[in-house]
Image: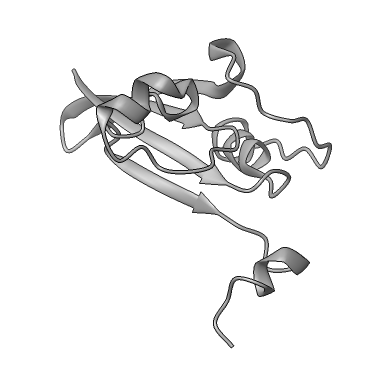
Length: 107
């Protein structure tokens, strides 16, 4: 079985967990609950067969991180960066209606 790791990143309150639940369970929750680093709350696993190959897909719902770990030292000193460098893909979720977004966009 092949393992595929997908990390979901984004600002707090943009709906990362709700979008993952919509994808997996066909249920979208509008209630905001802050994501923690608890393994039971933020790791979703399922299997899929694609072109005759069995894949185990792990979706990691990340809490807020201040920076992407540029080396393994940062990865071990800040637990929130754990497993980011070993991901197969990243999904960035953002809210276009967020006032803070426009302060970082070029004018």
